[in-house]
Image 1 (cartoon, one colour):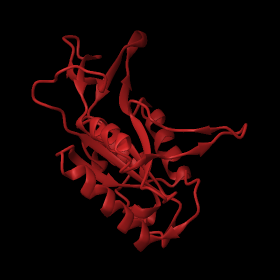
Image 2: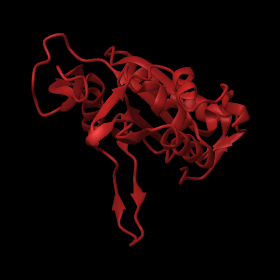
Image 3: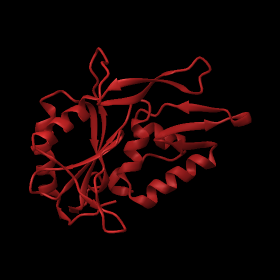
Image 4: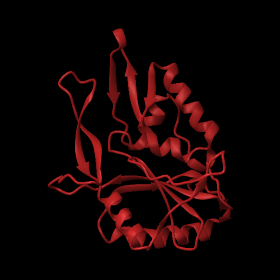
Amino acid sequence: MATGERISRQKAIEIIGAFSELIDRDNTINRATICGSLRRGCKSVGDAEIVIIPNYPKNDCLNEHTLQHSLFQSDTGDEPYTRECTNLLWRTLDRLVEEKVIQKAIYTDKNGRETNRWGKKFRSVCLPNNPFKIELYTAQPYNYGAIVCIRTGPADFSKMMVTRLRDYGMFLDQGIVWKCGDYGHREMIGVSDEFMFFELCRLAYLKPQNR
């Protein structure tokens, strides 16, 4: 949900373009979609939401910038194996913050304290001397479509989609769609694009501007 002062759509696109040039130099992104109100075609926006499948180095070397990254289905087919992989995007963001090229976005909680959003799956940044927030949500090929749809919104539409999943014996957990089975068993369902997510919810695809 947008928390900042609204700016024009064109200005937001210019800011995202400047930010993209900084991170594209290190080949950090495999796939990305601008979501939120920008994707829905709003003329003014309070922030930018981008869903990203980040790149990882081939050697998967471990360091302080690692994420637990689920890649492989287990032998039983219900839970994915996990292994630690370096997220090149997060490494680049850390370096750019240290070099003062970008800065961590500042939020104010309900008690008036300033906080940052700088976690394993979600980070929020600003360009220097510019309060406009660029919120970055990481995904993987198996849940990219679900996260893109949910982050596109609006909020009521996203809630409706999650409800429809439950109506058809599925649920969303940590951005992953799961199918409910007998005796507490669950099976992960891959959702690589939005069309698949709409099919699971048994709805015809709606363009973002019509949601």
